[in-house]
Length: 343
Image 1 (cartoon, rainbow, N blue to C red):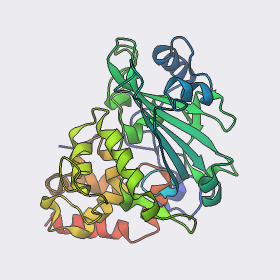
Image 2 (image 1 turned 60 degrees about the horizontal axis):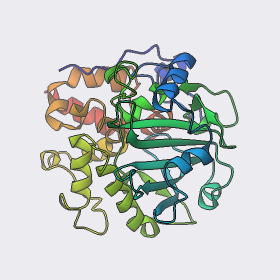
Image 3 (image 1 turned 45 degrees about the horizontal axis):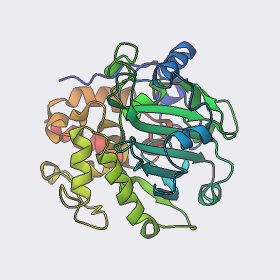
């Protein structure tokens, strides 16, 4: 099966070789699932929030029970997720326990420029929220919201930390979230599916968390497990369930801490390539084109992988992880493996 990614017009600089650290790359990254417009974003909000109950971050939090004494606000802060966008982050989650709201799950993610800002929760660059709650048809669906630093709802945002102090490209909802969270043109049309995009929640994997000096993995272990328990309540696809259960030692998540050495047994012959898949592929492909997580698929589709990853260089599909992939040995590990697979 040929990989389904849209071929891109890659910038001359990228075609010439790896991007320089910190360089801003727009091109077709984060656009594999299509690009939304302002009209799309407005229609999306009017579909998932028809009464405009969530026009501000404060209002969104109130609707989702963050201020309710009976709800626990789970906080994980002061880390960078290096598999996707590369911002420093603070994540807060509520699993709603209020009568009439049981079953709803809400995550709010604050994106920051620095570890210090993330640790003390000041000066966010953007706020991106996900909510699992009843949609227009009454069934629970995953919904996406964007807010600015002042807490005002936005239709678009930027997804590259390197663009903080220079030219930047903003992407509109809902497809701006689709490259990593699924949906978009590879999912379903929210207009005809009552707000449903096919997108969903991702697992939280310490393999792709980077820490500085202000906090640590040990500080976050217990609450990251709670985040993953929340993810499992959102009816995620089987690949997300498999990853979470693998990291925690089984379907009931018996481990208190993640087993970062976990890998599917079919990857035991390719531990180095699996490590690259974890850091540069798995974050997005647990929701979009899950076949990328199969070693057999890599072996059967060498030509497609070589074309998209090594020639077009549009994989990984997020600017931060794309730059890291080409400025580390990860691209060489992939090339070496693909060379072996085609013989």
